Amino acid sequence: MVSGFVIHTLGTSVDESTNSSKVLYSKFFRYDLLDEQSLLYERMKRKQQISIVASQTRSMCHLRRQASGRPANDFTVHLSDEPISLLEEDIGVYSLEAGDPFTQEKIVLWVSVFSLGFSLICDLQENLALAEYTLRMLVKYLVDSLKLLTNSNNIVLSADKIEMSLDKFIPLGQLLFLNHQAVQVLERELSSKMSL
Image (tube, rainbow, N blue to C red; front, top):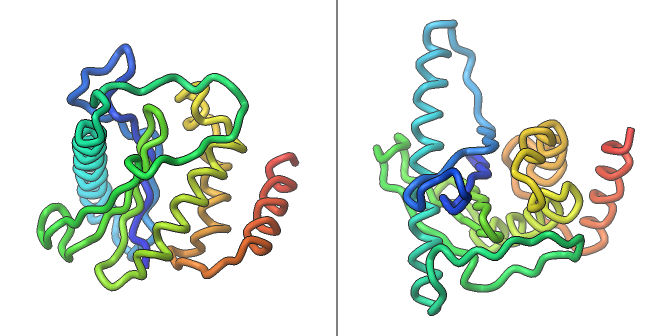
C-alpha cells in the first residue's frame, strides 16, 4: 500500500539555498477518525514526516547526481512543451527505519525532474517494481499534462488536478497493474474531466 505522495523542490531555485527543500504538494492516503485535538497533532506530525521525506529525497538526488559526474545543483530549466524523458540517475529508492519519522519502516521511491522531486512513500511489503512503474507514469503524466516545470506555482494552482490524477492512478493508496492501453484510457478520462 502507498502511504503518501510528495512533490517538492530540490533546493535549487533562486530564492532557496541548496540545503533546503520546499514542499509544494503532499497527500497521505490513510486517514483515521480522530477528534479535533488528535487531528491537529496528526497534522503537525504529518507535516514533519513530509519535510523529512523531502529533505532525504533532495539529499539522495544530489548524491546520485554527483556520483554520475554532474554537479549536484546542475538543474537545467525546462521551458519547452516537449515531453520529458527520465534519466536512470534521476530515479532512486531508500528506506526509512521504524520511528524515523514513521512508526513502521517505509520505502521511499523518488524521481527528480529538473528542479522538482516526486516521492512515493510505500509500505515495506509493497511491490517496488510496480511502485516504480506507477511513479514514472504518474510523474510523466503530471509534468506533461499540467506543465509543472514551467512555473512551480502551477503545482499550487493545479492541486485539484493532481488530486484527481492520484485518485485515478493510485486509488486509496492501492497500486494498479496497468498495461499501456489502460494507462491511455485513464489519461483520456482525466483529460476530459480536467477540461470541464
